[in-house]
Structures are given as structure tokens and as C-alpha cells.
Length: 141
Image 1 (cartoon, rainbow, N blue to C red):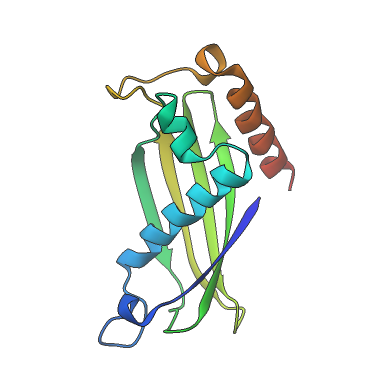
Image 2: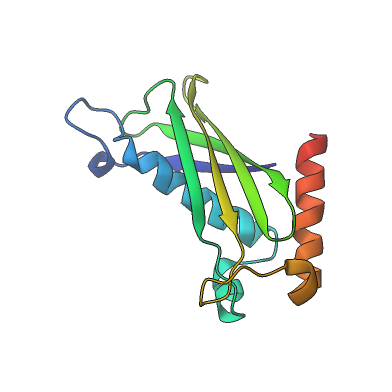
């Protein structure tokens, strides 16, 4: 499990004074990239080694709005990992109120720059182990 905090900026809100729904997907990505960095696998390093991680599917359910200057605390888990694909689960709460703001998932795969799927265990066994251990730890929590 990884935790990420993000304060809502004024420009991310809409006319109703709440964070526009599209920003949650962006925040999922920011959190995911920070999680990879914390795992010792910064996405830039992965790209430099010929690995891309495209988004195959993403969903977000909105529970309670985040407003300007409120902080969203996102927890991320690797729900499934098979060496080629993985699924992330997200849960966001307002730091100020504790209310559940959003839940979501995203599905990804590892590819070459030509977008051909690759098996991490075969091509990057050390990185495969990092993902495998993180996924196993997330299931245990």
C-alpha cells in the first residue's frame, strides 16, 4: 500500500467550487508515478530501458467532493499482477474531513516502445520481483 497526498488547486475546481471530475484521473496517475518512484522504479528509468506502461482501463467513482485547498489522501494498492499486466486500486479521503471522496481502479500492461507486451520476469527479472513483492504485500494488508 502506498499513500499520496494532493492539495486541490483553485484552477482544478469548477463553477460549483468542487474539483472537476477529470482531475481525479490525473491524480491517480500522479500517485501511481510516485508509487513507482518509491518502489525504486521511476517511470523515466523504465522508459529509458524501453518499458512503457500504458493505461488499458481506468474508472473512478465519486463519493464526496474535494474543494479548493482541501487535501486528498489517496491510498494505492496493486490488486493483481501477472508479470505482463497489473491492476491498481485507489481510495481517496479528504484529509480535513476524513470523508471518502473517491474509489477507482486502473489496468496497465508492460510494453516495448512499439507497444508489444513484454514479460517482466523474462526481460527485467529484478523489476519483476519488485512488482511481485509489492503486489503480495498489498494483498496481505
